[in-house]
Length: 440
Ligand code: NAD
Ligand code: G6P
Ligand code: MN
Image (cartoon, rainbow, N blue to C red; front, side, top):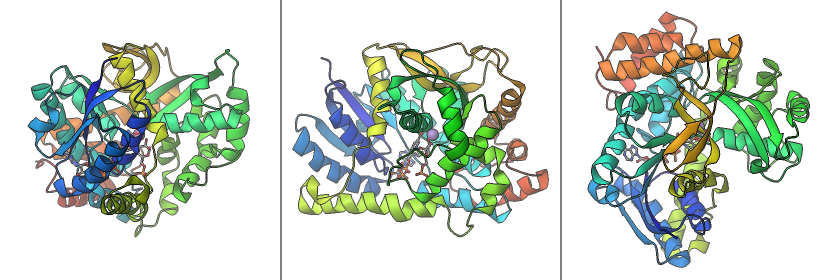
């Protein structure tokens, strides 16, 4: 069986150890010959990498492991780039969330003005990774889950149209895992789904078991009462995420024929979200206090003891969709997966040049999208507005245009007026001066 060389871009990410453990657990179907980490923050990456080195020595000393901040060393001789960078790291996420809240608008990593702000930082970072890959390993594929995926995907579609990059999100996978629990199935792969929308902005229209039995009636009844909080909930779910899963009950009521993505709460109930936010402590603070501290202190414990049992790193099992995607390309499995791809007529009554999240068959040449057909006015109207926001952000980045970015923030359904949009924009420009192109 062929063995692969992988570089993880954003080696210092809090998700890297979980993904390494997941890759190790899936070696029988996706064998590795080399694993590299790449990051532009050498010190942050070193802690994660030195701990992973110990794990790899214990479990798979045959895999050639290295880490670097040098793009040439990182991107030479690789088959896959797994990209999860966060340009500006958590301190900038914190600003993305807190600045809009100062103006009474919700603050979220990927939605509303916060997501737009993050997008303006991410575009350049992800394009740089694409260029390194094309320069040093032109046959490689990039599996990108760096956020905000919708804006990043529009930027790569427009600015690197030939690039072998696939943008994917784990939110539908997480929700499908909950749906499977609700209907009493062991695994989300025991369901076959139809879904359409934009990233963090979509709907399931059909959910069946593998015998073709319709699971929607049971889900509808359950979700209308409990949202996506399954009967015996996982104790690991943090309170803020649990609220989001529970709120899906109200989100679903807007269109009882479908099942919604949880992120729609930010567009349908922005006033509720603001009322339930603490402007002094947002999700970025929670992540810095919990996940980041936990992962880095575990890594340091492992390094000090020289053995993995000294830390509490956990396999990110649900991230195995990344291996599903890599094996689909490497072994032409034609697996059916939700990917963020150019619409090209798949949603019949929607812009062909919009990046949409829809089921695709994935093989050695990449994704083949499945046909969705016509969508209703409600979804079409919402998606038209949101796709315009995403396109305006890329326009603004490309043209260095203040006006386009002001239009983008004004058009976001989360923002009440052009004057509020302008006030937020001016604060975001100040906060992002080390990251955004200069606008005029
Ligand atoms: P993190 O800050 O812990 O890790 C990101 C790493 O990227 C940092 O080590 C940072 O130094 C590095 N980095 C930043 N800019 C870079 C650049 N230009 N080149 C190379 N490295 C760079 O963040 P995290 O919370 O672990 O999340 C990582 C990313 O994964 C984020 O973009 C997050 O939104 C995304 N994510 C996406 C999904 C999805 O569904 N698509 C799911 C989870 C996380
Ligand atoms: C989900 C989404 C990601 C997002 C993440 C945020 O997994 O699909 O796109 O980055 O949630 O999680 P966090 O724990 O960092 O708030
Ligand atoms: Mn996502």
